[in-house]
Length: 201
View (cartoon, rainbow, N blue to C red):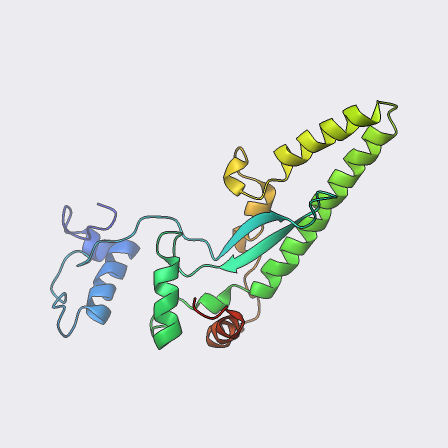
């Protein structure tokens, strides 16, 4: 029913914001060969997975010290479809009528990631210092430190239980551009990324 327009309730196509948005989609994208103009619901299957503008992953930067860093990747759809849409944008650019992906600042996301990396590393260093000064046997301290490192700072985010603070760095508009008309240049961003991409990928 969420994406059905007036499939179940005729008033949904005219009396709600979502219903009107569905009809607007059909008007804008349904012309030519699609023939959706008279549809009462969106004429294609709709992905219902959640979208977030950036993906944050935690990686170990130094195996010896256990220091970590948080990597940021811009997403162009949900996890299942981001790469597909990215490939289309690389070939043809962003489609007219889309919400601009550049409204979310990659620079702000990277700054937030660096700040959180510093906090995590400082927290770990503080924990190590406490263990060292507590008078425990060094071998025991090293062992417990290793256990703490492996449980708290894993490269694979699926090993974490529940949502972590570094996964929500851009929630609630924290990484949005606040200046009217200010956007990241997605075409330039993708061009730079392609130049740095290893040959054969």
